[in-house]
Length: 158
Image 1 (tube, rainbow, N blue to C red):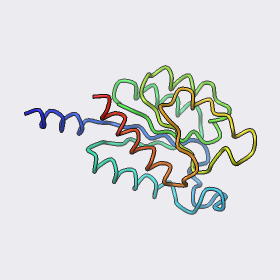
Image 2 (image 1 turned 45 degrees about the vertical axis):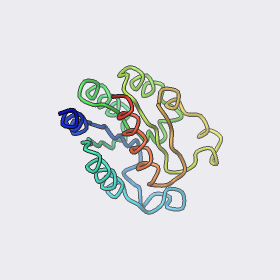
Image 3 (image 1 turned 30 degrees about the vertical axis):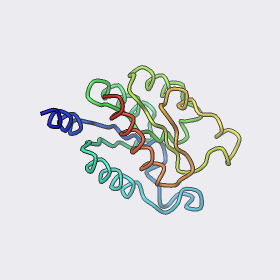
C-alpha cells in the first residue's frame, strides 16, 4: 500500500523547464561554444528522463524576461520544481531572481558552457543564490544532469 502511495507521488511530480533568451537558436548559434544539439533535442532527452522517473515536464523557451517570470508565477501551485537556463538574464535579471525566490520551489540552474571560463561579466549569476544548485559546462548534458539532480532532491524531500 505504501509503494502505491509513493508511486502516485512520483507520477504527480511536475517540473517546469525554462529556457531563456537565444536558446531557441541552439545548434546554430556559436556551435563552438554551445554545440550543435538543438533545443528540441534537449527537450526530448529531458522528457525521456522525466518519463523514466515518473515525472511530467512543461517546457517553455522565451526571449522575453516577463514571459519567464509569468511562467514561474503560474507554476507556483502546480509544480514541484524548476529547471532553468536563464541565458543572458543570468547576469542581469534581479526580477527573474526575485520571481524564483518568490515562488519558493526548488530550482536548479543550468548552463551549457562553463561560464567561469568565459568573459568576466558571465562569472556572476543572480540566479545561483536562490537555486538548489547549478550545473555548468557539460553542454546539453548540463540539462540532463540538472534534471536528475532536481528529481533526486525532490525524492529526498518527500
